Length: 398
Image (cartoon, rainbow, N blue to C red; front, side, top):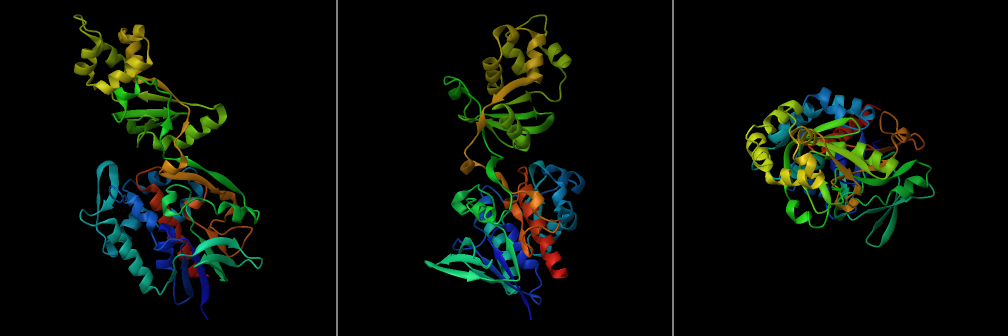
């Protein structure tokens, strides 16, 4: 007799889990509160579906914070394995800018989702949409609201794939935290990650820089440095150049109420080289020197003028130091609804190496509902697929 697996949530980790579970061993059911599976998966595909990243597995795993809990799952189903799995499933990929991996041009996100759904269908998975999870019953069953009726579901194994609290329009609001807290499972409130950060720009400065990019820069916070680009906004600053520093920024915000970042506007030049380029005998206009000798654009120059004194701007040595080490103060994060992803959720000490809840045997939790951080660039999606694949293999083995 087949055992029953109930998967609560229909996101990325749930999709691959359902596709890879052994349906000769298990009767598999997915319960999703939306009208269809994979809604957040499609939202992630706006502007191109960044599936994973091409960097070496050795470096890849270190991008997560923390990363130890994910090592076994990632080693079993790494970014290289994922690409191979996609290709075998009929989804060709290519490596784009910054090493990011996308479906081959012309393949839309909905087509990738369709392949996953077809795999699930072939695996005889039962799909129950419009089923909102209401928590646990007194007998530890799963309670769902469907068509204004509450029903109770019992299974041999329950797997929760409920997501974080970003993109609430897709149904991931994080309201499920209370149900696990009722079961004495330690959970943290969700916080914005990979989001915009608040800088108290002067009002008359905002029109000069809003929507403008700083490219080929490096940013440092609490000793961690990342190369990339950012966009200056009315709120402050956002973009791939600062997202990987989210853990360090949040830590400083909690400890001090503000966070200090240092921007290197010319990472490939030393202070000495920059000073030399600014110290010409003819000594023309400083702005002209910055444009012609250092190739700085008007946005970068405006940012410098706004954040250092006139005396420092006119001193080659001091200006060079600021170009290599421009301090900016962050005073907060964007609203969680505007974040690309979140941290918070079930504390990692509550799960085993197989993602089973230690205090609730036969109940598992995977994906963004766990308290870990993943940068943009395909890392979050990869982690969800790694966990889903790993858990399927584990359940198939018992």
